[in-house]
Image (cartoon, rainbow, N blue to C red; front, side):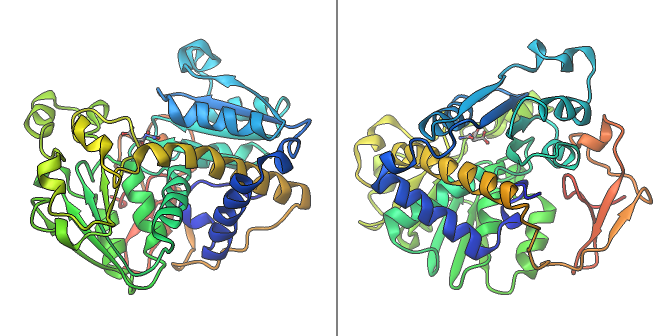
Length: 361
Ligand code: NCD
């Protein structure tokens, strides 16, 4: 059974086929209007969401399928203490595919171990968000025409911003990608991501402290919201909340053909005047999210029908260690639910939690 938990669960070829399918759907929507007739998608959202949940819902409806689910964990049996493993074993009796968003990192991976139907990670804590990555890739393809030889600035909350982590992982597999990380010290990319980037032979990256100094170099500027809900310390949030704001003055130094992306919702990191600039691609990006989710649902359901095995060539040596270490991350699903402590040994010598990628203690 194939799932999408991490962007690298799809090979580069599979990713590009899904993006191409999304482009075909855009070109001829009528052709796909009954493609999922008789199928049901369950959206299990344990954390607030507007566009991701509605985008999954409208994607399934446009494919002629149906949607069940919840958008508030308090209205489900979770409030009675049910585990993710049990919830999905129940849901599999009612649906053909699951999209899960969870505040705990690794929850969708746990779900995939028990569901018996395809599971899509719709965002887990500050860890990963692979369907936003597919959205971003389709947008980059449509706006820039390529995935390679691009200079991309990631700006804002690189620590808790799961969309950033997933997009960097996906882009690291292409030639000529240069990543420029623009964040305050407190919101730098997590350690595991920096290590991963250091060991990715194709990727060039550097860290800077202002967007002004790199603006003229960028093909893509990826803006992010400071993830207020993930801060344990409110004072720290107050210190960094206004770190980076994109306004027309700063945008004036950018190339004519640069694009500005943002997964949305925005708070104050892009001023309203920027919306009128043709380089502002974030509302076009939202619409791409629906088409690429249509392509993903179709693909995973087809693979499930074919019982297609997992054919990823492992990037890292993938022996798992089970129950020999403890994950130190309090946001990890393994800190609250009774799951196997599952660790993966990476090429850089570190042993990292399979659910959240934190380094073993
Ligand atoms: C993002 C998310 O949920 O991680 N939103 C989204 O899915 N479009 C970004 C965010 O919440 O800031």
